[in-house]
Image (cartoon, rainbow, N blue to C red; front, side, top):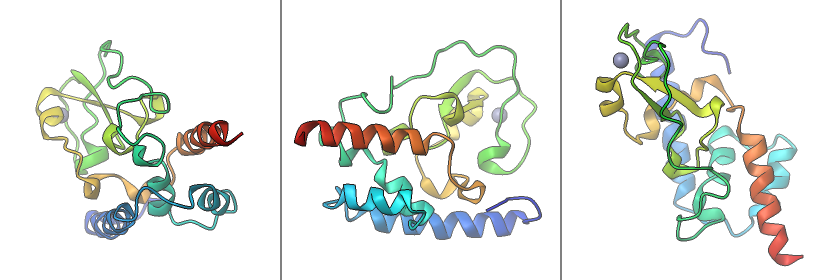
Length: 162
Ligand SMILES: [Zn+2]
């Protein structure tokens, strides 16, 4: 799904709709048939909300303390001189220099601390960035990190059962 050509309202409609579907899916976690659903993901038979729900930490880490799949809680504090990327979340540009690195897909929901899930923000926008999944850029399609993340969860799950 490309965001090009969509109006802000169109983008926000997609976000509200897929955010709602994702939250509905979360009510069924942890998934009892994770491996079966993973097979469906590999066969391209899952929607994006369903696929991202497979990455939720409740599926592999019931106390959510381990960072074995997601990596450390925080990004490297080294920011450089880049601009705030507010447009990814709020759809308007901010010219202020970035001062913090946040997760595009929230860490608490399974988003890993990797470059493709990194969002540089200024102080003000970093304060505003919540874990509200309706702000997530669903319209951009599957995030780069998801395949690797789900493969790692599968490895973790199958290592317990042999
Ligand atoms: Zn900003």
